Length: 313
Image 1 (cartoon, rainbow, N blue to C red):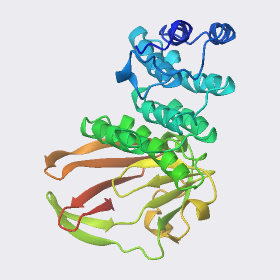
Image 2: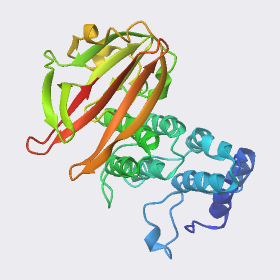
Image 3: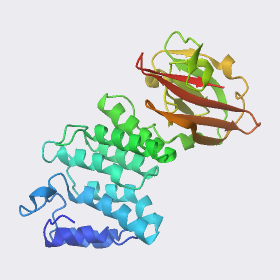
C-alpha cells in the first residue's frame, strides 16, 4: 500500500476492511486533518499514478473479495460520492487525478457498479488523458480483451459498457444512459434499427462453413425505454435516450427480426465457437425471448479485409 502520511493511510484503512466502509469514521479523519488530495510521499517514487480515491476503490474490491462480502465492492459508487463531496479534486496534476481513478476502475469489482462510479467521475470533470502507460480508455480496452480471451464474457461486456461510457464522454456525446446489457432483461423488443442509411446482408465463407445473413452495421433493438446495442463483435450494451443522438443515421430492419418483435427478452446466453484460429476467438451472443424464439449472433474477422462481419441465425 502506498504511503501518503499517517492520517491519510488511516483513511485508506477505512476502505480496506473487506466490508462496507464506515464513512463516518472516514469523515472524522478528514476533520482531524487528513488531506483527501494527498499524493504518495517522496520516499515512494514508484507509487506515482495513485491517489487516495484510486487506492480506496482498489482495496475496497480486493478486501471485499477476500472476506466474501460483496457489499464492500458494491458500495463503490458511495465511496466515489464520499470523496467528491468532501473535496477530492479530479483536476489535480493537470487532470491526472481523475484519469488515474478512471483507469483504476479496471482493478475493481467487475459489476455494473463500476459504470455508475465512472459516470460520477466524468460528471465531476475526469478526462481520458494520456498517462505514462496510455490513456484510461487504453487500459479499459486491454482489460476487456483480456477478460474476453479468458472466456470471462460477462466481465468483458461490463468493461465494454465502461469503454463506451468513457469514449462517449471524450467525444462529447451523451453517456449517462449507457449501461450494461442486462438492463434490457424483461423488456419488449418493438423494432430493430441498423446504423447507416444502407444495410447489406450477404453470405460468406468462414472456417466452419458458409454463414448467412452477414452484415457490418451496428444494430439497435428498441426495448421499451432502452436501446440494446449490438456491434460487429457480437458485444452488447444498453443505451437510454434519443436514437438520433445515439445513432444519427439508421435504417429500419425490423422485418428481418419479426420472430422476436413483440416478445420480451428472457435471457442472454454467451459462448464461444468450439475452435480458435490465429485471428482470435469467435464470440457468440444469443437473445432468448419469452415466447421461445431466439436470435443468435456471432462475428467473423476477415484478416485480408481487416473487417469484422456480424451474422445472425
